[in-house]
Length: 489
Image (cartoon, rainbow, N blue to C red; front, side, top):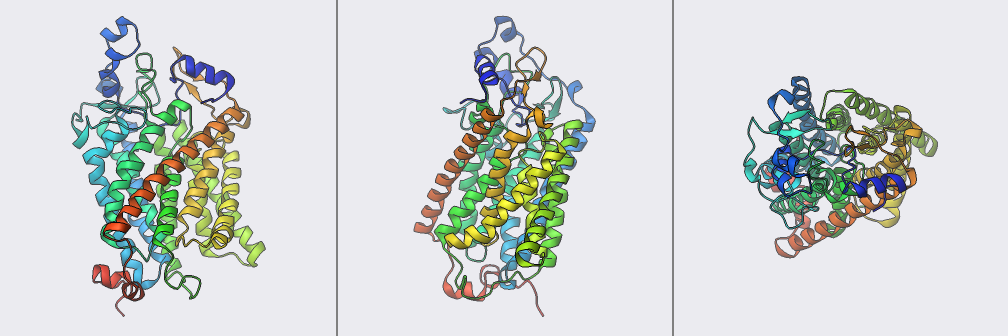
């Protein structure tokens, strides 16, 4: 896979070790365990690098723990409130319960086998696609084990990285439920989430974000996930989180079918006030999501922070302007949708773009998402209830491909870092080659999660069923699935 004529050649020569600044690290201990098997000098194999407590910065640790709490807040309560306000009153509690339970289940699955599948490369026949189970149930993880960052000789306690990535695994499947809200049974949904995390999220997280870490590249230059080795840029999850969830949502809403009465009767959001509160909390939490993905409290975290600010602001304004032109009045729902579209689009580019090009990226994504939400969905007649595909997948695709453009140093971007050099340095940037790499990464994500999601949904539909009866749907999922009502007055 070609990144650029010059940079690609350098990466091939290094055994795909010309690692990009964007991706998240693997564990130092895993890489050290593989040193003896790597194509490294005998002396290096005899004395493998071992991180120590002195390489941990307390400021980094404090920031990453705070960032983890911010990302958890994006799920509960932010996403739950955002989605809950958009559905009808009779289904509000079902959405809240779905999001809450998914977060709980995903955290346990991450502890059980998710972390090991995503961020190890041993004990698996396909180390480029997913990790093994060597660290299942966090075996071997302790306060004295460490995770690599993007800086040589700078580490985090391994528990810190486990926690941070756990919050990503929690919110991603929760995003999916918005695509078929108001018409899915609770138990099959939770079973789908367990299977989808295992077969879609963990492998894609491994392919995009796993690598040996900068201190271990000389000994293990090929120890990385498939898309990382290609040179795909994804700072905080444009592919792993948003395209992944958006495609799963689209597949689900098509297989489950539209809501009864869709297009024949009005189905307005029951509380845009609640949706506004949820969107605001999402924006705040997203600073931890994006800026925290730099793994250190440094200038690159600040860059991701301001880009998250500027891109989102531009996207919110753009959506409002488009509505003013098209409908003669801007709506709160449109403004909130634009904000989320901007947050999604800047996610893969947050640590790469200049704040100015981040504004352009956010504005472009907002416009494209507007077209998909208002025009394409109606033309193709799929019922993506809360526009998970139209905003998360489409915004993620615009952001992922756009990252290849805005990362160009000629446009003020950060380029990519060649960690295989004796002293890490910027690699030669080929805009066209990088954009093609981004397109390949997007296509791989769409294909992988599309197939996995279809198989899981179809299997559940054929066995225990996905959809409640017409009577249950008419009365509402809250009282029938959970025995409660959101409002008793």
